Length: 97
Image (cartoon, rainbow, N blue to C red; front, side, top):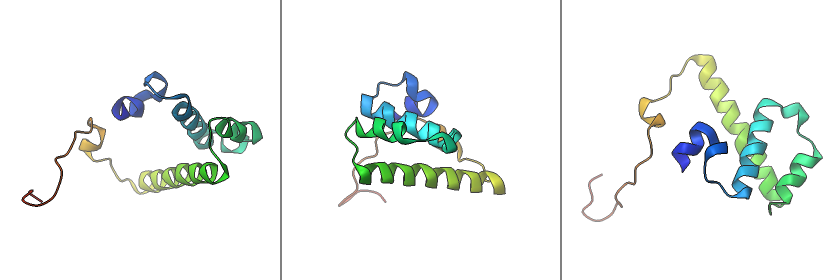
């Protein structure tokens, strides 16, 4: 699901809450000056309290900041970042590091 959502979350099998978070993240990313009370209320309608809304804003803002810095200095994505994530074996006693 995560790999599919990374390409287009609107086509992924997300809960209503996950979709609302993605919608908010897109608006905050592309139209930050237009985010207003109805957008926050939409998140609250999906069970997010003030702390969760604040966390959402912080995470989206930080991700956007880091992405812009990386783009600004010309850092290229790692090729394997675009691959579908695979389960990793548990680490522990006798496991290879």
